[in-house]
Amino acid sequence: MKHGDKFKADGERNRYTVMAANDRFSIMVKPFAPKKTYIYTIADLELGVRGPCDLIFGPPYALDTQDGARLAMEMLTNGEMSVSRRNCVSLTDAERSQLNV
Image (cartoon, rainbow, N blue to C red; front, side):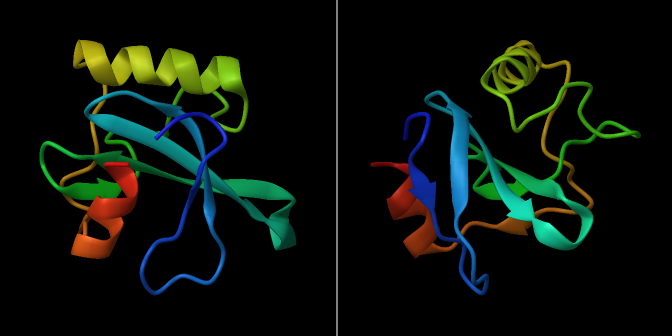
């Protein structure tokens, strides 16, 4: 996937927009209107999971911007941040096929 692509998570109504992606990770966001902010998820194709990051106070960058997502992707790639093992869900076959395109 590449920046701007859409991702439909199983069981969720609204689609995510890919903000940054590489061979292993995809950082995606969708609007959260009641709070006028966004919800994010990070997919790890190697582990087959998606969820929030494992940092205590969340990602240090605004993931709804291209620059923030790029910096977060660098942290994921360098091993400074990863998908939370505690709050992740396994990717379904349909989700995997969307992300591998």
